[in-house]
Length: 252
View 1 (cartoon, rainbow, N blue to C red):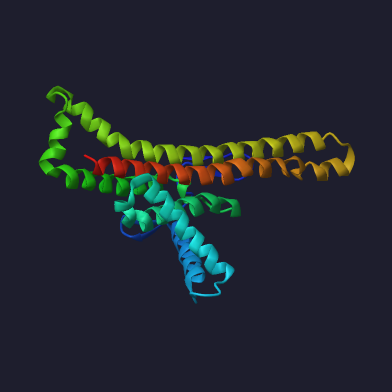
View 2: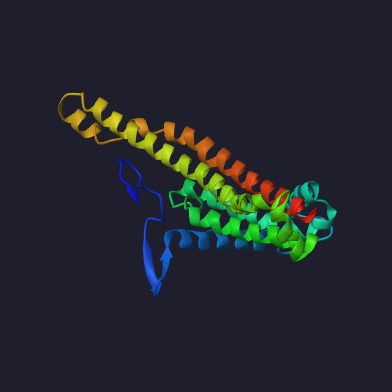
């Protein structure tokens, strides 16, 4: 469903899609997601090429700092035995962060499409479930749904399924709300600018009424919060919940 207002177009789903193979469609969300993955891959290649043991460059020092930060985050929240999750959590954070911030360049943000967060949440939920089965066995996992009494089984199942739903909707809602609010403010300022400058008599007013002067500055200030701060925080929170859920699942 499209929401048409003055200013940039806001869409609840990806703005366009192109048929590729039968029912499979290439959407803008998929395309920009590929761009995000390509950017992260190129950045990793640039940061890690020509590594040295001595006289390291600032580039290498920055790369080592990123790795150490990821290690501390995962091990600090999950424990040393879960160190093998560092690449996964780091990749999840980087993908989420770049997807959130890429909207600053005027392109569609993949995280403004619920399908993106839903896919991430399903992957995380699969890992959580596998850790629970690994900790207590398949029988123990299924028996857990009947605790403390069997009559609560449907509610326990719903509680289990609520985990990926809440993770996906929380991230999606915060990102989309920022896009919607920023666009509404942009559109409102453009209309206000047109009406206010239109009061100027003569040709000057007629020309200036088409220039959204009031839209300059304020949207940029809002972007500091909705795009930068909120984007970074949502990526952090999603990864924090991921590590906590997986660690708790492994404990049985």
